Image (cartoon, rainbow, N blue to C red):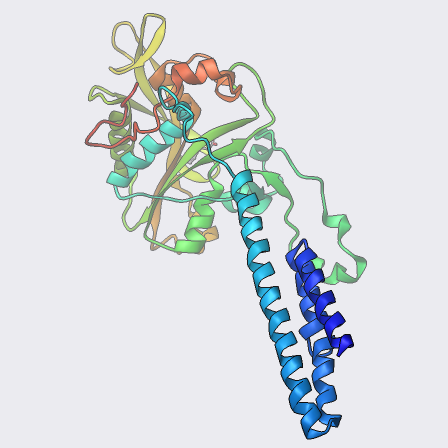
Length: 379
Ligand code: PHE
């Protein structure tokens, strides 16, 4: 009996002293678990005479119940304390004043991309994307620039280190069969033409805005800049569709009707024929303002777009039959469009992250461009 008393006293003392839920759980296992000491006591009942057993049984049961109750009480207390501690540490001071006005603004490049998406959505174009880390097949080969093509050299491409030799020798057969594609930072958004044709098939109407990279840096060139690509693939598409689309887009973007385009024959490997597009502009207060014919008094022409009818070979690389499908494509610099529309004169400032510049040229987050509300709100 005294053994049972001291076991009971010990259990209750330890439970009361337990500082953590883990320690408490260890005590539960030690006393009430399958191999616990109180469970052990219970097992001794089997070897007792009936009178002994009914006396001892009642006593053991009482001890077991008391210990179980003590465990439950202590558990509730420890859980309560843990919650108290968490509530005390996770405070939120609701008396802090809110800022006077919302801070932060939308970068002009993002704003212009949103404007372009809005304008082209109205013409039935979806927004497509592709990776900035591209392979040379999508960036060049499939755009009709085979390995020896001089246009490749003109792109000032950032290549990744050649990993072809890093292939394990045992793999050399597989590498030999499968053409190795070196990786690069895409030099234009045109690879999205190929990716979209391969993925979506035809007909197709997409724009693809995004970052592009060229190893070039001065007042008008940054190693990273933004382009937007346009691609239409359908049946019976001709240059007239291209001209109408570009005119409609530029009128909506610059929000004026007197935009005059001049199409000049040019050369891009991926379009045939290729057309460079100029817009007329004049100088007002030292700023280029788009509008009017470049041949008008006080006006001049400025190149804004590269474009053309998609080369048959490119349509083939896109997995389509060029006898069935034709199309046009265009590409232009988003940063340049933003500069022309909103009057910044240094491209480098776009990427300096200078808050004063952002305050001046940035857009309020709620100035979402819409065709009904105007794509140039907040300008
Ligand atoms: N990818 C060309 C460039 O970066 C632009 C372009 C796109 C021209 C589509 C024609 C058609 O200069």
